[in-house]
Image (cartoon, rainbow, N blue to C red; front, side, top):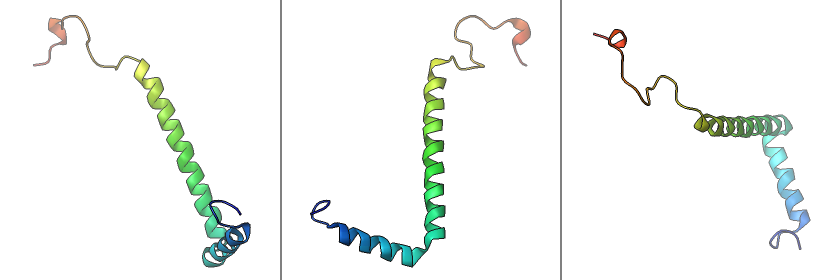
Amino acid sequence: MGFGGISIWSLLLILAIVILLFGTKKLRNVGGDLGSAIKNFKKSVKDEEVGKDKKPEGQVIEGKVKEEDKVG
């Protein structure tokens, strides 16, 4: 018995059929694209967590606007 009732031979047969249908070059490209997508996702999540700790730029949190800073 393998994973949930699927034997190792069934998994190998499925793998062989997938390779015959798509070819190794296409599967390699899909694997590379998937890997780079996961890497970019992890990087953006990490950047978002770092950005939460900083104060947003361009906002006045406290204080008054000076007369020369007013537009209009």
